Length: 129
Image (cartoon, rainbow, N blue to C red):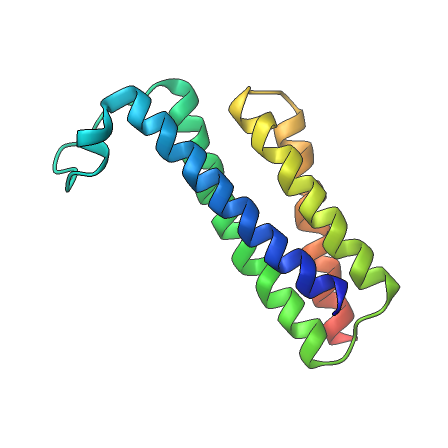
């Protein structure tokens, strides 16, 4: 199995882990009953919970781009050692991004964001050229 596909699956597991962690934070802040309700009113979560919610949305946004890039290199048969390295760098950067966002590490959150975005761009370039 190609590294790019393995990383794509692992990044999806990272999203699921973030989703569960964020849900636990929401439960802590508002109680389980509110979290499973239709949420008709806008709650005020703690700063840490709101950071995790933003990190989760950011991961989903970046995951979509990464998935398209992976499919592009697979479909164009453009995979080689550099695309595999790009995939792993993307995953490591996204893993590091979670605590950086949660704990408010400046400027590391932005650094890890860029370290995840650049490999995605390189994957697109590999598929195109």
